[in-house]
Amino acid sequence: MNATMTSAPESLFTEHLAGNRYFDRSFAIDAVKVLPGEYFVTAKNEVLVTVLGSCVSACIRDRCRGIGGMNHFMLPVRGDADPLMSASARYGIFAMEVLINHLLKLGARREDLEAKVFGGGRVVASLSGCDVGERNVAFVRAYLARERIALVAEDLLDVHPRKVYFFPLSGRVMMKKLVLERNDCVVDRERAYARQLRDTPVSGDVELFR
Image: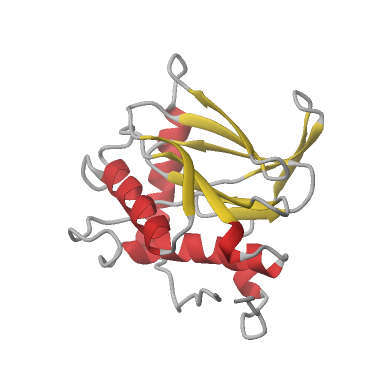
């Protein structure tokens, strides 16, 4: 069934939209940096870039139309056994559904969506217990399975941060594990993001149009 966005306010798509744009000289195309709590969607020939520690990014694309996007999220508190029923899952559900809603708004069809997911490393264990990365991973896998979105590639868990490049037009992903580099910036950014989630909880609901 085709999706309609008539009842979704425009603010739904702008409040968390990544705004850090630059020209990537390595690939000679425009790039967008997606930070924690942000997402971006595009139908253009550009690259979406993020760096992940305990957080997870879902790269979701309409495989027939070349429309795709990336989010970057974290579950802020310890949850229940069911990764889709805990209070903390609200944050992951918001991140996934605002991304999917925007893809549908651009003309993607839900039955043609596929996902590649990355992150969940054990690099910020002190945030909310040592299992924060594992909970993020369990959530995104369960969410995609429930929504019947094909998971076609993943690189998850481990102990290292990752830098991810996603090319929505082609669906290609390039990923580098940051094994030999100091990762203070990644850790500090995710700690700040976790504090922000505690101080300013998500309000309202996001409706996923089907």
